[in-house]
Length: 213
Ligand code: ADP
View 1 (tube, rainbow, N blue to C red):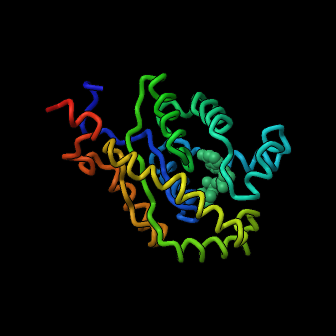
View 2 (cartoon, protein in one colour):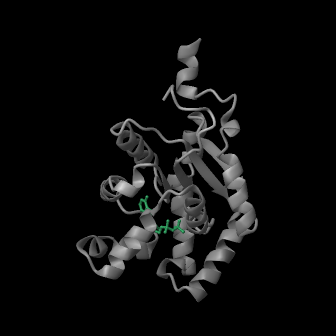
């Protein structure tokens, strides 16, 4: 909005990146520092499975195979979560959107609230490090989808469905790329730095670039 000061901190955010990149860890830290709720679709699905709800029964096998829950079901839970009062001042989405169709749906949800996304943080981590982290997590925390065969499928799905979001958000000047292959604290500091208004300076959104001429 025109009246908002330039230096306003970004508060409508999302975090994306390959499985094992550390999104959940960073989302919790950043949400606390920024005073906004972290909203993880993966966590909501895992809770539904653990609680044995109708949704949980519906998505259990999908999660176990490392595939994506369908866009309509996912949109419904995100829409409902964003409608809660704690998400009105801002939010940090972790693991949503994960497809171009979900990104379009998110834009539509926010447009319906007269809002727009402030930034999409992309956590970049090399594949061998991802595999190493997830196999460690499988042994400790026992997440069913961290077994090696499922990890391979999740990485494949990520490349096919989620990686195109990098270009999508780059074209909209929302992309903030952060090297996630460092300590938790260093990554958190880098994300906060990437959220400063200066990080987007000079970027012209691709869709409107033509109409400006
Ligand atoms: P990770 O990013 O490490 O794979 P998440 O907790 O984000 O872990 O997701 C776990 C699983 O939950 C995914 O493999 C997928 O089955 C499901 N899931 C999470 N977010 C979405 C989404 N936006 N769309 C579809 N499925 C999702």
